[in-house]
Amino acid sequence: MSDNFRCFKHVGFALDPIHVGTGGAKLRRVDLSIVRDPVTKVPKIPGSSLAGVHRAYVAMARNKYPGCAGQGQPDASGVGGHCCKPDCPVCTVFGFAKGKDSTIGFAGLAAFSDAHILLFPVATREGPLWVTSPEQLRIAGLPIPNVDKDAIYRENNSEQPLNLGWLLLPVEKLSNYADIKKGLEKLGVLKYIFDRFGVVSDKLFSHVVNSNLEVRTSVSINPETGAAEDGALFTYEALPRATLLSWEITCKNPKHFKIGNKDIIAANDKDKVHSIVEAAHPYLEHLGIGGMGTRGMGRLRVLESNASHNQSAEIEPVLKSKSQEARS
Ligand SMILES: [Zn+2]
Image 1 (tube, rainbow, N blue to C red):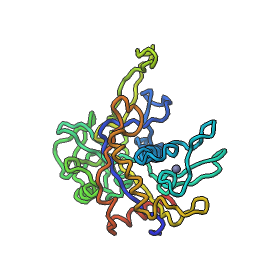
Image 2 (image 1 turned 45 degrees about the vertical axis):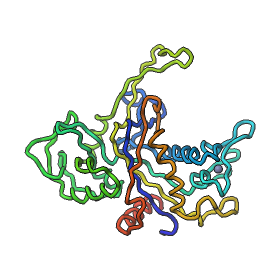
Image 3 (image 1 turned 135 degrees about the vertical axis):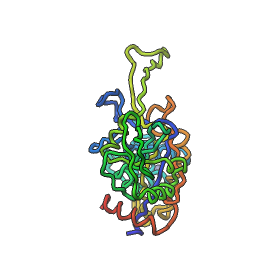
Image 4 (image 1 turned 180 degrees about the horizontal axis):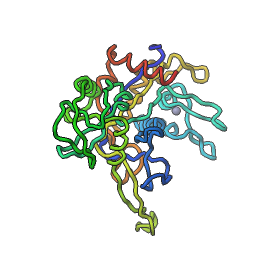
């Protein structure tokens, strides 16, 4: 199995608020809401959005493959579209679709999971605290704590309750605090943050996140007049700056695939597939992900993780069993 694919874990730090929208539908109290998990209502970034933005940035970084960046279909005159060649790093790694009704297609050598919140910053009277939950830790492959009370679990318990935004909670001791801290450090999370985290139950987590999102009000500008449009005041929500997200990129072995009966030559192994994807990281940090980029949103710094590069047996079995579960 390990010869077929390898999973690479990533953690990203939001340098700006991040808005990955649902496509304009007014579902909640804001006009432009962000994507949420349908069951837990915790916001996330869909894997398809992650894959799309990585694809665009890898094409930009290589600048030889402009037609391979987007959706793949040529324009009305038949110009452009995915090149679909076995030596193209964009088409082989991210896949392609061509022909009428996308009859010719390849799924791509890299598959993206959704990006889930790993740590969410909340204001407390002691300064910022990064909050997580058993489910978010499980998704990131970290030790899962036992959290059964409506409380905030930290390194030590305290007589003094602590406020998470407007919510006042008792402080309990987290039994496997040290293990989680070590796991966060391994994923590249900064010391300032892993020294200041707390765990709440999954149910509370959803409440805490949804009541501490960034909500902004803006006006639409008419591009012709440069003035605000009439009645164009709108609100939108975003993950706040300093949110940490985790996602997984599964890289398949190129030797097991052919394109048009030809061997893939853009990448010869799983690590090479991953290094092609990584070319997008500086672009994510400077150009960002999601909407409202012109309003100073979206920059995401991908942290330097030990777990995504090492071959150590310690992390890999966790990832493998998880991804086999998810993809088999
Ligand atoms: Zn191509």
